[in-house]
Length: 372
Image 1 (cartoon, one colour):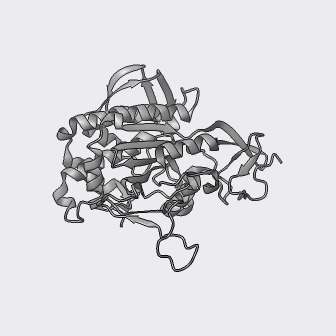
Image 2: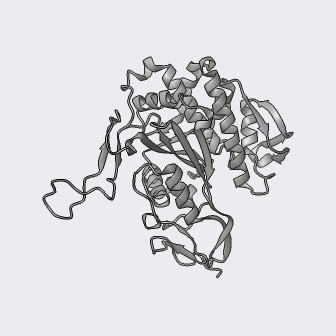
Image 3: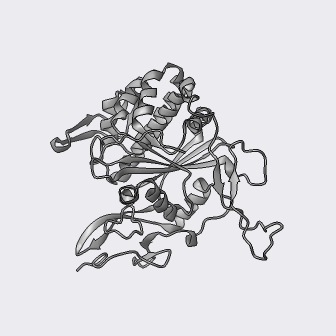
């Protein structure tokens, strides 16, 4: 597969974006790709991507020449013909939005699309989530800046127990144009919003209640963070609610979306390892969804945790491993195998509050995690 876009754009601001923007951009872009099929089909045939899944742990190898051989991984073809292995009907992804200028991601959203049941499950991973990596700033939002798309997938595999099938990275400057392109979004703003930050060129002022937001107004609403008691977690909840509203309006008004504008955004602002044929296929499948077919959740964690680094307290989110495993296996796991703690490499706290790694090894340098 190849990148459908290789150009990187600037972020609108440190707190701009969030879960909904990446997802909304993807949904709009694939809708545009579907409607400009004549262009896309010159690039590739419409088809779902092939995915590779591990065999079921209770499946015994057949006609193996050596006792104890493991069965080969199962390659599930895009035609998804009826077989004993159903996992090929599930496709996993990560949507990434970049921070402004330093290479870190502002928000990470992982999800699983079940094309058999036509369900889309999406889970937000807070950007300050503690990860078990060798560098000093052990936050999930540093995975891409340290290793690119491969590093991002590898780091997420440690958290999820499986490697996501594909990634989508979107230029944030497209957000305002996209919202304006669908005629704005009618949304119930959850709280009064009043915040000014000249350094970020932010001036956010909204009354609580239902209103139709333009692209710029929508960006301001989803950027707002300071008024929530739970900080970034409150912002995530608002973003998810906004996305739900926007997605419903996209489905309702798809025929009136200005396709040429959105197609231009597809070409200029999206980086992904899906090819055009895959995008077209996902477009057709996702546009079959109803609003109730899309669910959102946030990774369970201690959202106000901190870790001492060289004597300085640094804000982190530590994962509640047991609750996280329940969410992975109920909503995200694309395989037929139960994912357990032994499949993860998570740096978090035990019941006594002590930092530990589920893999048994904390990848930390001198002075990390120490008050002195």
